[in-house]
Image: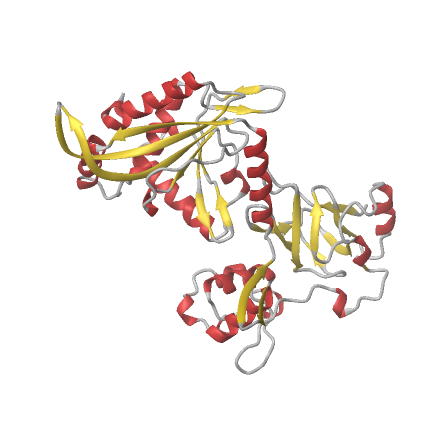
Length: 419
């Protein structure tokens, strides 16, 4: 029997996917694990793989957005009645763009099938490349004309682009590709000129806008700030880095200290689920990472059980994957608390919007050298300000303050982490 292929949920926050293009066409044979299409989710551009063997009989959505569980294709045996399978679901038209569907029963016109992405090389020839490979090449400034494709018919796919040096790019070619994605407008009136650029909002940016708006205007935020003396943390970090090949960062110390503090304050390590509050026994800390299209939050699972070296390696690995758009859904799910650190950008203090369903998020500023009073004397000190954003539906002021007191005591004496 023909198998209905629906838009899967590729992340815990995904509500729709944007089909960038198909790597298979109607009539092609497919095997489990083969990539059918490339889908832009709210967090990354990902490959949609086949899970059954057969022939691609029907493409419901050549390109465009599809809601979760919307029909996108049918795989079966050649000549099989795919329409009966679709009609039998009672969900005809459940996916966006079904009016432009492609099927084996219709004459297949080349301009109806999402064509392989092509760039003009120096000799004017078209270069076959998948949408994801093209997107990665454009973002990295890579000239596809210098890459040998390993896909079907010499098509350039994602793995062919990984590792290519941007210095090999043909800048004019990349500029033309970028120009096709944006619209720059210039007008002149009364001897004044205005110029602007319109850029289509990505699925990631749409989701960030929606989720943060929901969080800000649904969750009653309140904020608690504390200033932490970082002298001992600086000394301990220097000692650790003198005797280790791993360079521990201040962010590693913050993540580990937060994890330790959360084990002592279960109400902070909580999630708002609408009709109930979940008090999490495990500590999974999301670490906000800035990427080109917005913000991704890879998750350090069981952060309270890991050493500073383990946290350092995991944060680096996940941050690198986030920037290369290689994060897997399970690496961005399950957070019980989130940290947003802008200290490396010279930001002294800020507030962050809670990352649902977490009850709290910690905004971390930079270490600032300033005069402080110690033992009645004014001396030069190194301090760091942190601000805890709390969802008042879950956390009260006293609970948030107690958590910050614990965090402050740990960072002011990091040897407490050894207990």
